[in-house]
Image 1 (cartoon, rainbow, N blue to C red):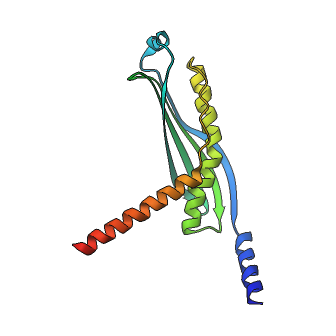
Image 2 (tube, helix red, strand yellow):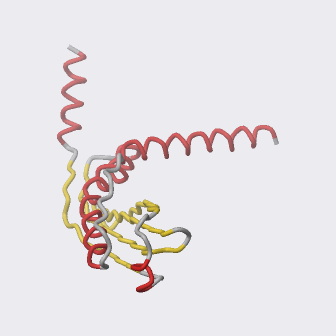
Image 3 (cartoon, rainbow, N blue to C red):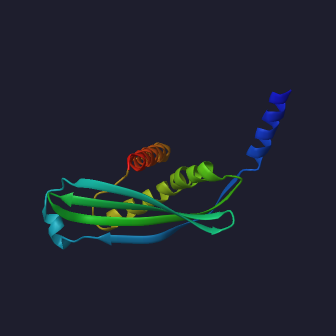
Length: 166
């Protein structure tokens, strides 16, 4: 009987959770070809480096802006052939989540929704820059979040042990 009541309470809590994408938009875009036309004289054997970052801001009660920043640096030997930076953002209405659950939604579910849009922008800009198409591989945001949480926990434990020794 108690299990049924606990199950009913869990279902009621789960039904109060709301997650809605309100809007997706391109917040910032930068494309540079530092070598200019010289880049097209070289043999195309690029080294591609991808950096990823997310930033979250609370806009209003239950409304959050999540911005996914992708920075792609492509080099030929040691020279930068092109650099693309895309900041794809979205407004998300989230109700019924707090603490760790809210952090996980903002850092995994939201960027997962934004990534295909950012990836498309990168590919379009690169091809319009007269370079071969650049299709970025999928990203496992859940794994990245779990690794970041584990690293933060280890860092906190390390700082705690250093204070205890002092």
